[in-house]
Amino acid sequence: MFDRKKYMKQYSKEYFKSNKDKYNKEWQRLRCARRLRNKQKAIDLLGGECQICGYNECIAALDFHHREGEKKEAKMSVLWHYSWKRIKKELDKCDLLCANCHRELHFKKGL
Image 1 (cartoon, helix red, strand yellow):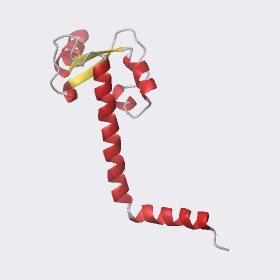
Image 2: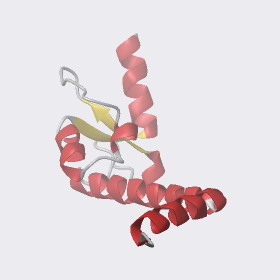
Image 3: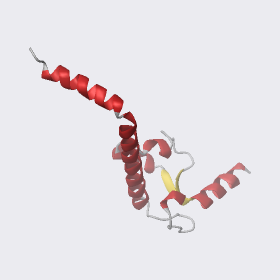
């Protein structure tokens, strides 16, 4: 007797293997889009601009700085692929800074 479920499972596995590059590219595109959506949402939540100088031109130049004394669960760059609830929990410990102010802050802290 023909087992459709078993056939489809095998067919899908073989199809994926033969189209692996196509699926990997699509997966990376979707992952990147989700990361950018979550970062924009986080930036909006924290006011949309650097809390020191007011910079707001490019989201790539905005960083999330963990405040002194706050326990960091994970780096924000890793959390973008997690649920919004987990991201928000970590954002509650952060300030939004432009890359320049963020670097200056860490440089001064190291002196």
